[in-house]
Length: 364
Image (tube, rainbow, N blue to C red; front, side, top):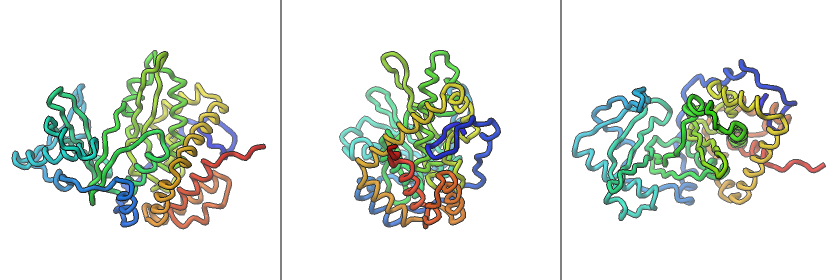
């Protein structure tokens, strides 16, 4: 296996046919946000009252395909509304943007306009994407309106607490508002940027190893190439890369361990081969240890918030008993332990996996 956590068997290269083993056979179940999680969101300023809900946006009268600059179908549709409804929606959506960006300060909304609303039928959350334009300088930004799902909320919170990336989102009943995460979609990066002559391949490989480790430690699944972005930052001598998840629907839901390791998805093959070609086993172990150390530091600094979140998760249901049982068995084998057998639910599994992955190694 290419990206080997500390307690895995000895290193060996990942064979090409192993990349096709990780498949999602059925659509994920949507779980409601329960009372305990709702209280957590209120306490940590994630819950609010919104002027526009998902149900309001769902009352569009028609749609047409949205094409990219090359004329290809983006799988998004631009929707349209009756004129009166559109005026009300536009005002309400600029207020939502203000809640997301300026804590509800409406003095900045006079020159803002919601000039386009896109809808995606593909995916669990069936999101709306709202484009907000600043009429003073034509600059634009996006945010997303989605159906609330407890799995996704847990994924967003764990990303915010344990990853190097802060996340801004708001919840109101069955409506979830998320900020836009800027970057190059993973599938586009692999197709158009991975073979660029000035790409720093070693840095990209290192970042993918770290991303792989972050996903597995907190059990974030389904990181196929179109579910993450690559953020490219110009350094004074070269480029730096950050791989960021943008889809959190499969937070600790699946029963297969490999679902939580991006290296096992077929459309990540090119980056996995890059890692295999450029990184030695000791490099990979070093980068994994670096990322686990950073995650452990974040967990310590946010220990009270993380405990509150895990307590919510331990009392919640966000997967099926069959999947929980399968994951416990596979993680027992992976870590060489029997401790997962004592876990009662997915919250216990996440808690124990974080403990085993993030606790410091014993000094010899």
